[in-house]
Length: 360
Image (cartoon, rainbow, N blue to C red; front, side, top):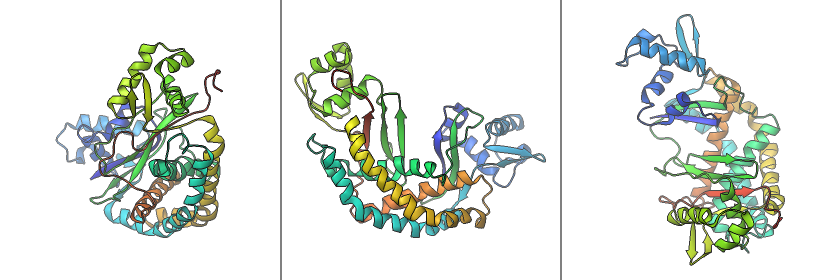
């Protein structure tokens, strides 16, 4: 099974098509065939040589391939099954240390939830612990600290205008609880969704503009449609349109003209000063007390396996693998719960960095 992984951002259609399970197959096969070097005339795909060469040239232009001595070579890690299992087994020790750390400090995360007043707003620890542990601690702020410390250089700007690291795995049985976080950010805040590969199909939502502020206001008690319309200076019909969509997706419960319950986590500026500060501190400790000691061994893997790619790409692959091993172990030990058939609201959260003037 070919699986394309991308850490960072791109909007280029030629790259995005690699994620399509059907129409991106030929493109994925071409990139994989270039692991050890390939010529257009040697590609065993039933398309014209001109078409194959055009695709290879396109991915060379985007920096995914390079051209040398009449051959196209992959610039990104192409990880085959034996290599994959070697990487997973080699990263087990560092992952186990992180698991033990998270188990010891989950009580600190729970306290952070209480100090932020989230339980008083209707969010129980069991409702949001996966977001706090897997989404914030082991992803958003884990990667932020890795970048800040220089352990993982931020994705460089690519020829397509995006900023990304990319790798492909060819594995029949990957880690079951492999996951990513899909995030949208704007000036006033953003939204994110946990996406587990085995939970297919998984829909991830993007909340933006006044929908972010709506969620924040609802979470602190402004549940009347008229109130929301007045505070946000948005027509009531527009508010109702968002509310109807959220109700259809079971993101909230509505009772007459009032929201009875919001079924996803909405963080307000005060939460960033309390909960997020706690999460950031713990992510920093994971990096400083564990990752720093293992970085050279992690990077040594790249050279032991003779994987021809930039160091940043391999490190991104390794840290992604570590967080997925951690997720799997935390699930086995009952620290987190990952449902087989989650509702749309599961794993969804949003945040705002500023509130309307009348509320701030």
